[in-house]
Length: 168
Ligand code: 4NP
Image 1 (cartoon, rainbow, N blue to C red):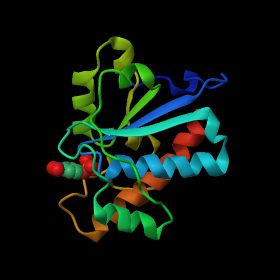
Image 2: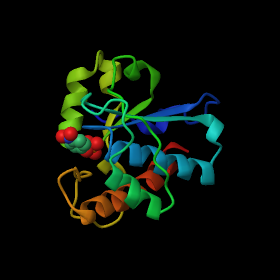
Image 3: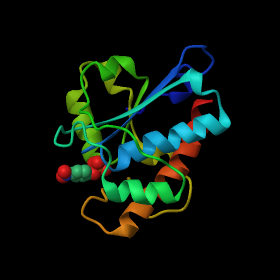
Image 4: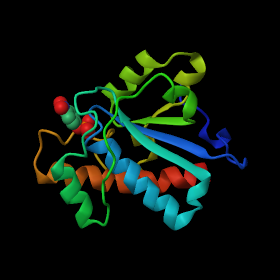
């Protein structure tokens, strides 16, 4: 079930806490994390927010984002400095909204969710797509070329803008 995000901390002073999740936490979710930080910085009050990203797996724990993702992001003005980490059970308590990049992430997150309340925090990033696109998910760019990384950034920029609108 998709939570009613309109009720998530909308009119409360406490931080709005958003966690972006992908498979490895070195391509899509750290890019979403930084893009959303910039949206919040430009359009809101950063102090009101808690923003982070994590991976389903731990293969890249401690690493900076994939160098290809960093290069493509830098060209658009995003400096990716997150260090990869694996999602943990406590994230389901700590965050209000846990946003998966594709259907595999969503089903993995549902497996990991420790409670029905935690389950309700899980939403797909595609929920926030508004531009015409043939994608219903943020595709994994890891085995793709430059176009795959540019596509991810296009989709994430659109989704982050709308995510901010939906939470404010
Ligand atoms: P991400 O991309 O989930 O967007 O960080 C991937 C990164 C690494 C792997 C797969 C996807 N991997 O198989 O190591």
